[in-house]
Length: 283
Image (cartoon, rainbow, N blue to C red; front, side, top):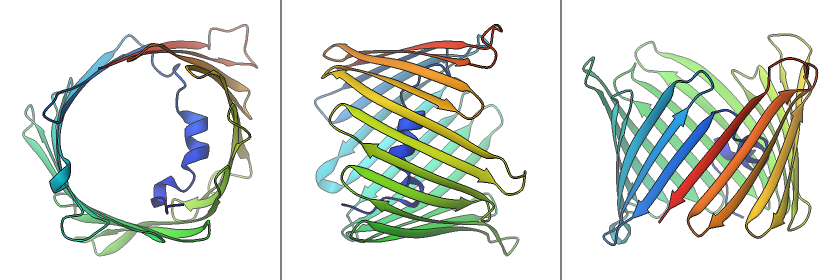
């Protein structure tokens, strides 16, 4: 198995706990299309439970033989972002990214440079914000026979000091994975577990303890059940009694519907529930 990025050491459990739950937005619409000349377009729109709307349009050009990808994004906050990626040009497994942002309303600009280097038993990344600080964040993971260990650190060049550090260990197997992370200067600890029980059932859990706020440990558990090849259901609940359910179905080729709801099991007589839906059209 390939070595994941530092932020993805607990990806399987985090995806099960957070992905494909549709109650966070009242409505979400996503339209994707691809052209014969390797240009992909994506338009997304969301409406929140507070009736606020937001959206973004994205165009992506990919030149796979030369390892070049250019992505342009423009959102309803009138923020422009250009991302240029070069993969495997200088060395096998090395990807360089330049991300440039511009806010026309305030004339604010941003410029970031990132490096990703991946080998069979190593995955390292560097993120540099050229205009803020500048600051640099570096992380790396090494792996051997499924065992993983990694660390990350942030550094402010102008201030000349370390801004943060984290560490993580884990184990990945084809049908299960486990990870322990210590983030926020080794003050927030999390342990997660994911298990693909069979082709239909997945289960996972995560426990989190913030040493700065007390002795209470937060716990989440989630499960996913595939009803058939085109649909599945998910459910999760945390230690505070807040539960969420979701249903996803491929209505036809290129059209996906997702619906979800969350509710507080301790306050069923109150209007604390949230309901959301998502439509995705892809061609």
